[in-house]
Each structure stands twice: as C-alpha cells, then as structure tokens.
Image (cartoon, rainbow, N blue to C red; front, side, top):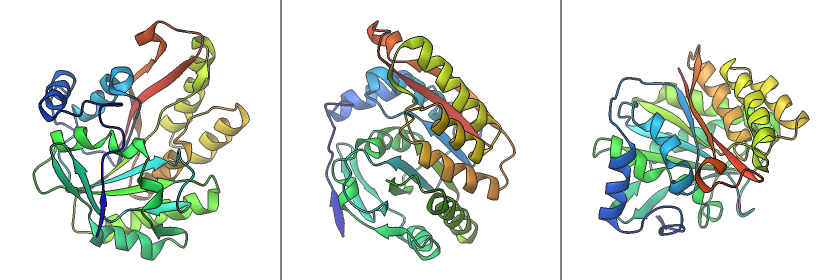
Length: 267
C-alpha cells in the first residue's frame, strides 16, 4: 500500500494539529445545505485562498467519497494519475476508496494507478483538512492528478468518473482543486477569470476550454474542471453558482501580479 507523507505542511497550511483545526474553524461556518455534483475550490496557501475555499466547504453536506481532481505542478508521474493508499496528515490517516477508484481505472483508457505524480503535489493535500473537517469519520478520498490537456482523454475521464459514481453505492462528490489566472495585474486577472467563470456557469465545457486557450487564461486546473463538467452533466447537473472570487492582491496589497481564486458549486 502506498503511503503519502505531507509535502507542504507548514508552508501552505499549519503543521500543528491544533493550530490547523483552529484555522479551519475560523473560516468554515458550517451550514450544510447542499449536495452538489461537483465543486471548484482554490489551492493556494491558506492565508491567500483558504477563506475562498471555505465558502464552499461551509455549506457542503458530508459525502462518503471525495474524488479530488488536481493539476500536475511537478511534471512527475502519469498523465492521469490515480493514487491508492493512505495520506498521512497531522490529524490522522486519510484512506482512499480503492473500490470506486478501480472502477474509474477500468473505465478510463488513460487513467493509471500511480504514486509519483502525488509525492510533491500540493493541490490535493491542501483540500484534505477541509474535507476532514466537514465529513463523518468513515469518509474516503480518490486523489487524481491530471497532467494532460487532451480533450479526448479529459472527456473520457469525465465519463469514467460519472459511470463509476453511478455504479458505486456511495455518495460521491467531485472536487476540482484549481486556482484561476496567474501573475498578471488585478484588472487583467478579473477580466480573464470572469470569462472562464462565465462558461463554467453555463456548464459548457467546450466553450470554457476554448475561452481558456484563446484568452491565454492560466487557470492551472482547467483540465480538471473540463472533466468535472463532463461528469457532473452526465450525473444530471443543471446549474452552477459562483460563491466567491478574490485575488492574492487583496491579501498582500500587490496588484501588479495577482492570482485569482474562485469557489463554485455545480448542482
């Protein structure tokens, strides 16, 4: 069994268990009221984007399994890398739902069981404390790191996920871990993010990807969002809502090179 150790504790979020819990409690105001098909949440350091991610986690009901789709920042591992094993965190061990993960692997030609893409990848790890906080003790995760922008492969992954969820007896949520536009000024980022969000809210994955490419929007999890939109619509999603959008400039005061953060629910 693969065991993943934390890679960014004390960098992106507090290492100390009590300090981490205190932070999560300070930003997540629990009002569990929705069971969406998918959500999109940011993955920067908590000081920058934790409060934006918390907008989603505050209102989510607990799920049995969380499929967490995240971009590949390291270039390691398979194009579509599915981790099975345990993620060790300061508050305890988080186990993967291997049964449902195997269904995804069976249904996708390109998804592969892989460890290497996950070793140093931060974008799933930063979601885990939030997921743990809102969930019952028996929850599990399916971490998937996506390193391709090939639409056929991404659409296939979306279908594999939706079919696996249908066959599963569990209540499953798709979590897309993604920041929005990177390292341009505030005005440019607000415009580019608005263009991408507009197509997500229309549930139009093709127009969304076309927009990201044609306007050079550096949304790191765009491929993950594409697959999630495919899967969510297959599962009956009919609407999406933007809960919050902020930039790093609003935290550090530097509006010359900002990163955008959005929290979106797809129901």
